[in-house]
Image (cartoon, rainbow over all chains, first blue to last red; front, side, top):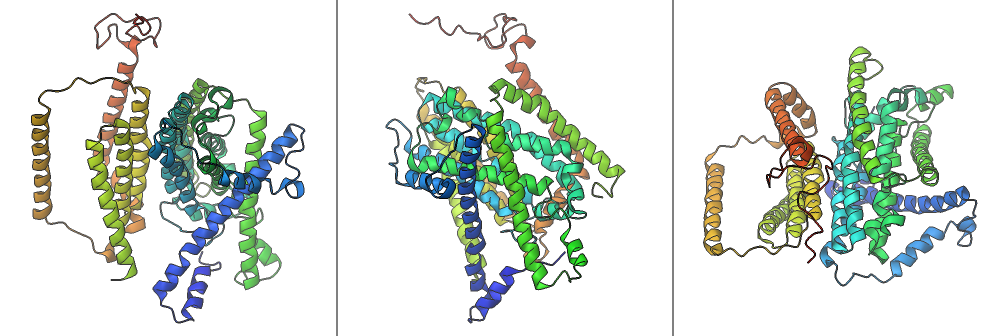
Length: 372
Length: 199
């Protein structure tokens, strides 16, 4: 499967043309994809915030942001600028060090997880061998940051919010990991690129959602719970806890939480599309289209076409899922904390265990359909 | 020295310093909350050291288990029972500190001796398995390390059942700490009356 544009190689060759050594060219190359993905994540947040405001307005028969730019598209930028210039307040009796470290610990793991999100065969920062496991491990760091900020705020609502966030995140991590494990079992690999390639055989028909319907639903529920979206936004339940662990935060520190939660939502949507909806795959395989048009698959035109189709498909699927998440926010009531823990431990955990067992059995029975 | 080796050396120095200073902080700091958070930092740095050794799966498992589960539960427990309590001053605190320092130094010297006398079979960078290690770990867990793996899981199960028995008062007829008969009606009822000490 070694086709696709190799931007790194051509970039390094281009720099070597100026008489630089290979190592220096590599060092100049290294930050570029990281910066690109960071910018993509932040732009993704701006788009999601705008979508959230517009779609919630439509759901409540309002107009929503209207004056900042056409249809209010500049509203998120205005929001961001406002947060940037706001005074940064640390409450007098708060613990300054932990209060500052909390938001950072929440945001950094989420951004690090973008390391493994592929937008095409070679369009990812690093195809690390442990792939999807890295995301599961990194997302388990977040509750420490939430507990830290909840404790450091010296406020009972914050502490309760932090404790709720930690309890929720621990409970939903397990079914999440088990449903990922079923996919890994079918792929024989942890790498996200292999997971997508495994689904690329027959276009939309070979996507994992048809082979793992239960896993898909469990994963989506758990991903919503990990992102603290309604119906699982107990840690910041505004009617009970003011704003949970964010209560005492203002200015840029609050913005870090805000950014973190939206980047996490986009990341979860991207991962659902990678694990279950064929990632960068077009519903009709690109190879078939190329054959139909009588073009060789390695032609430069087809290569650029495939890469752009890949990026468009990944983003499109992810934003479809973000749209569903926003609609869910305005159509479902919040669960109680005991219902939340019951759902996680007594329903999702047994179901995902059974799903894993059945997947293993099906893999032995029908190796051609469930990855031999 | 090439750039890769320099980077590795800098990473190793920083991670080792964080591990040593962090671990000292865990033991020496007065505030238990700071100790718990520093413990998380130490676990993270150990994961970083594993990464430097090309053991990415072990590093991720370290983060998932020790930081994501163990440390979060420790912090969780500390915050749930964060009682402001005046501890009784201990009279012979100095001699206790001297004795524990001696014991720790003895253990350290033992470890250093093992490190210096043992012949370590290091794999050269050429034949290190790197990314393939996940597969190797799986193979070992299902063949020659199957028995230890299963015994460890049984041990964890026993610990879990023990914790449930301790936490659920309706399993036992007497309270374990006080010896008083347990109210079978309300499981969540505290064994000590909470609101009576108002005078």
